[in-house]
Length: 402
Ligand code: LMR
Image (cartoon, rainbow, N blue to C red; front, side):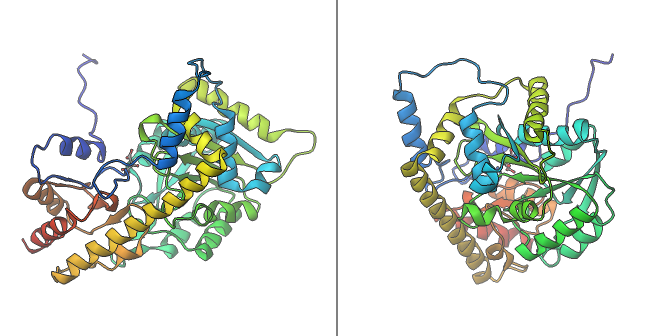
């Protein structure tokens, strides 16, 4: 019978996270899913988020009415300002919709490209966040891959990337990660983004930026959005999927936005408003309207000078701790003279690094050492702390030797 279906593939990230949760060993270490953990190993609540959450809970005007399809306007406008800057925001060239976090923002971005802009193919980095690969055909787009990470040099393969994008067809989508590339942590430099922007402009591609880690690469919101702004300055129309899961730690509240910035205003036409209506129409068919609670918190943090300053300061602390754990891990591996390349652990950005282990070494890490990383040997550096970094290095040393 057609109902007698096979099981769907397990999610390569969330299945590992689940396996960790089922491991009763006190030694178990979770360096799988990309959630920021503090020095005590706990998923972190930002101080500004706690303040905003408590003040919203104390308010007598809270209600459970539906938000509009386009979500909380105040959140969308704060997010658009954070991405494009106040000047571009005020130029009236932006459509921004509050979404069910980065995943739905990406689905809407791809949906807009495919159903409204007529794109047929989407180019995704090699390697990429596995969900990128999964979403593309779900939005009726053909999947193509472009070279991104050079596993031998442990760095971005900019020439390969430019050569592959140079073969894309006019109107194709190119999915780019704005900063803190998942899974490699290897980002383009600003001058390299300019070269990518040249190709995108020449070939008239549709750039979709996935920005899930704004602030968490450099500690600076503006610096981390330089790729998007480079494109906008060049007069390229862009689509941006923004997530507030990591940089506000609002994972299960599902807060994000999808936005489009158009370069030219057509006289007599309100293109931004029309784009917003197209995105709203797609969102209505997908999930109707987004949840409010986390968005109220996010909008309050970004819209209040004191809370915002507190948040931006803490982002720097978080990035500082990640940087320190990158140094600690590299140091522990080098001190043990473990065969392999470990320099890139401190040269990459954000939460992730690819260790360069084989699939069976990763398996051994899990089965023998209770260390849970994804099959491509990506570890979440933010899952490391002073209590487990030596243990993780010791386990890497063991699997590399055996
Ligand atoms: C990750 O890559 O671990 C995060 O983006 C979380 C997720 O949903 O996969």
